Image 1: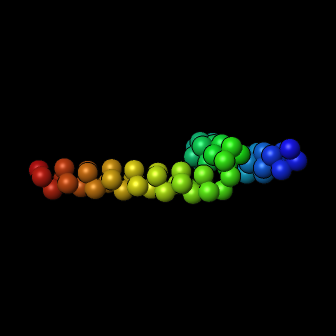
Image 2 (image 1 turned 30 degrees about the vertical axis):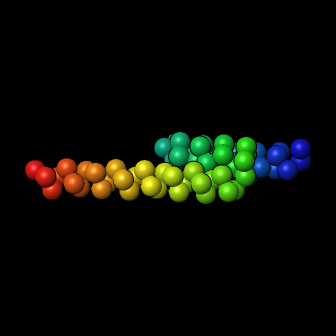
Length: 66
């Protein structure tokens, strides 16, 4: 229980130091970290990176096709 409170305190401290738009990006990572630990955050970030890379590739291909 103490560890979960420490994690929540850490997440709240980080969120308070971020600008509102950046805080929006932090919230999903903090949730994953609280529920499942640091590996869940890595998995989340890897999936998000892959989604963004695929989006950029797709748009680049659409642009080249014009």
